[in-house]
Length: 206
Image (cartoon, rainbow, N blue to C red; front, side, top):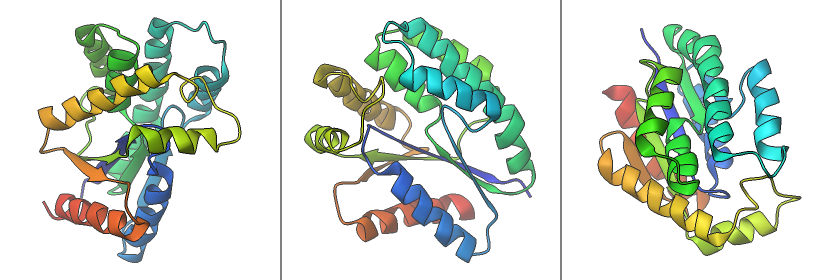
């Protein structure tokens, strides 16, 4: 039996890590084998790329970001995601190609057609069955980023950048409502988790 591929998306500080952890626990309690991965990263080479992307030089270009993100992604898909799905596991991925569409496309202003062609080359036929889009107000994101110990290249971007990110995710959710489930994450954790479980249960039973 083939596995299920679920990705989590959202702006910085939206609570993805917390809810992936809680979802993992519930899925395992229900008897599912779960594999959790993250982007960029998830493999030995991908983690090295992650360090460069998040903490590398400030003059790293948008084009270099795009190619590095997808180099990490190509390795993750082939080394981890596809084998896990073939083994019947539920794969939970903290970010996937929607992040590239939004961050390097809408955020950095790269050509959308070119961005998509590079994503397509990196992932091939591997596509999420469900994407959970965690939505929070930009003021909440700013407050959470300010409270973190240090910021990376993305977290330190200005408000205009994150306004483009917010708009980019909203456009994605509208364009693919069957796959992308927008969740209001500015609510109590248990309430948010309940909505996530409804979406995940539907994917598991489809």
